[in-house]
Structure formats: C-alpha cells, structure tokens
Image 1 (spheres, rainbow, N blue to C red):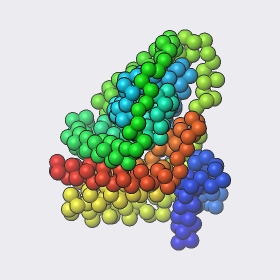
Image 2 (cartoon, rainbow, N blue to C red):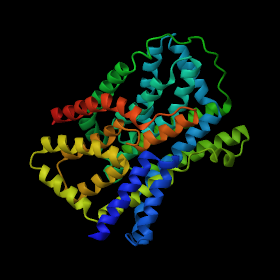
Image 3 (cartoon, rainbow, N blue to C red):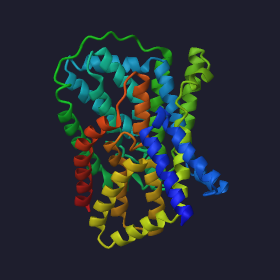
Image 4 (tube, rainbow, N blue to C red):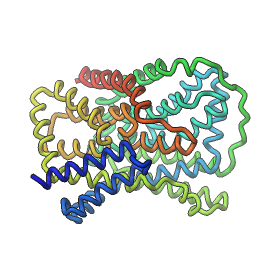
Length: 415
C-alpha cells in the first residue's frame, strides 16, 4: 500500500510539473524527473521502465519526421511564402484571414496530423498575421484548437489514435462510418465558438497587399517533401501499417535532399529542432506503466465492462471522463491508460469510439491537454508570444465543451 501511494504521489507531482512548469523548467524535465524518482525509490524495475519507453517507438519516429519537416520548411522560407499568400488572399479582411487559417489547419491536421499543425503551420500563421498587420493570437488559437478538433478525421490525424488502438487502426471505411459526421460537428462548432469568442479582435481590417518573395529551390523541395509525406501517410494508413517509420524516413529524406540542394549542413538544421519533446513522451510512458503496476488500469477496465451493458450511455460517460482526464494528465498517457483498459475489458465499439473522441477533442480545454498543444506553445514562444494556463482555459471552456457534446451526440446518433 505504501508503494502504491508513493507511486501515485510521484506520478501526480510529475504531471503537475508538466502542467504548471515550476521554475519555468521545460515540460520534459518534470516527466523525466518523475520517471527517475520511480526508479530511484525502487517503485519500478529498470526492465519495466525500458519496456515502457520502447512502447512509444512509433510515436517517437512520427515526431522526429514531423519536426525535421517543420524545421526544414522554416529555414527555407516556406512559412513566409505561405504567410504572404494567405494575407493577400484575405483581401484586407481579418475575419477572412482567420477563416483561411482555420481551413488550412483542417487540411494540415487531416493529412499530416495535429502535431504537424502545431509544429509546421503555427509559425506560418504567426508570420501571416504579422505580414497582414493583424492581431496574431486569434489566428494562433485557431491553430491550437483545430489541431485537436480535426484530429479524428483520419486515423493518421493524431498520434493518440495510434496509442488508443495499439498501433492497429480500423480500416478506413469503418473509420469514416464512425467519425466522419462527428468530425464535421467538432470542426464546425469549434470554429463558430472561437469566432464568437474572438469577434472583437477579428472585426478590423488587415493589410491586403503583402510583398511575397519567390519560393526558392529549397523551399519548393521542402513543400514537395511535405506533400509527399502526406500521400505516404494516407497510403500507409490504408494498408493498416504503423505510421512512425514512414514519417521518419520521409522527414529525414526531405531534410537531406533540401540540404543537398542548398549546400547546407543537416547537423546545423537538426540543432534547431525541439528534441525535448522526445524525453517528455518517454517519461509519460514510464509514468503510465507505473500506474498500471498499481492496478489502476484494472479498475478502469472494470468500469468499462460495467458500462458495456448500456453502450450509448457508456460511450457518452467514458468519452466525457476521458476528455477531462486528458487535461489532468495529458491525452497521451490518458490514451495509454484507456488503450490498456480496452484490451482488458473488450467493450463495444461504440464505447471505444467515444473514448477516441474524448482523448482527441478533450485536450482543447487546457494548454497541457495534448502533445500537439504543448508543441504549439513551444512554437509560439519561439515567436515571442505566450499563453498562460488560465487564458487558454477561458477559451477552451467555451469551445471544447460544446464541440465535445456535438461530436459525441453525433456519434451516438449514428449508432
């Protein structure tokens, strides 16, 4: 009992550190520190910790590929080119620029994942807002929220989908049958509520004639690499294969190809990547494994089994609870816990779908709800912007809760 309490305490403290970032230390420090304390106090054997870290291999590879793509595109001026294009197409309307950003976020999230929206699109959107002389925060919030709201359009749209289904995605036909309409509901409601919240800052005009430099050869190669990666991920998903390795290979190939064209060292480029996200994810996997060893997941599995007698009610409750829990402990470990519980409980498909909607959409409530939002926060900090926990929460309450109700309601309506 003492070991169980100590494990829970360390996991809770580590998660709180990731959320609050005491001393302004990076999120990864607190996740790794929690994992280290579990090992130091003998609450988890090293073999179990290594096994937990290994479970995230597909996610690590996925993130490596996406981060390399993003940094390559940034260095080659692709973001500035996209920004100027968006600003000119807005026609002097800030609200139209906001809609363009949101639509671009839907496409990016759908075909490249929510992490790509956070890492790749966010810097471009910030640049677009600056070039258009518009308030950047409404546009940046659009990036953060659509990254989660559109993250169940396709299986590849969110690494958390890989986690919840244990890396084995349902066929695309079955996926669309379950999530096409709930995704549309989540995307539409999130847009309407965010547009309402930010209406004052979106009411003015913006610059409509922004100078746009021609895209360099390196920029064109980076754009081609991103497009090729999107096609590769769709094909990989269609064949029900793991996404991590193809994404990593595509990211590395694009980076090396662009560096060869521009005669630039890939080592220099790699130094600019935010690698700290990898130990953050690894630490979270260890924390979840520690919780599993205390019997928490068995209790969750028992709850899912009890909910299986009324699938519709169970899906609504399970999805809502997981949506909130994702903000207390991040949706990646929350999805891991749910995934392990699903394996043990074998609940009806409707309940599993409700869990997926909760783990994907729920993180729009808070700034640490998902890995994508943490990556988004790192991206805007690099641009000199920052959003605190309470500020994001105020927007999240207004946007996430109605969208979650709409998405879950639509899924239950489908049956």
